[in-house]
Amino acid sequence: MRGFITGLMCIIGVGGCSAPTYRYLGQEAQTVTRGDLDFTVRRKEDSVEVVRTGFVYKPQQVDIAVAMRSAAEEVTGCTMKGGSFSGDVAVGEFKIGRCHSERKP
Image 1 (tube, rainbow, N blue to C red):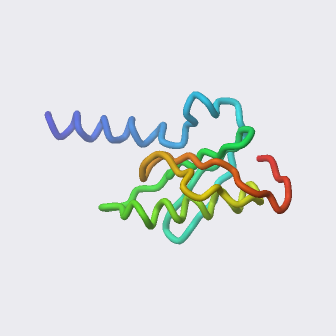
Image 2 (cartoon, one colour; image 1 turned 180 degrees about the vertical axis):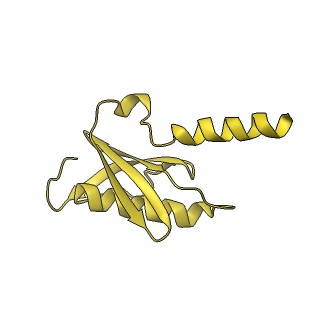
């Protein structure tokens, strides 16, 4: 029974994993793939939210943060401010630095 409940909780948890945080509700999302990692990217004003939507076993936080930054830069056409990353291996947020072209998802 415990295994069934654990499995059910995992399925429910995965089902909502690309949902935006409150700040990004209503913002258009774009999906980006970096290697084996899939991300959903949303932009609002001068910040970007990146949500990892795929499963990884024992994630390497630095590698995922770099991939998140790359996904955010592709979608926005902007570089992210150095040291602006906040979050974890599932949901990260960056502050937009300099834009080469204005793309708004």
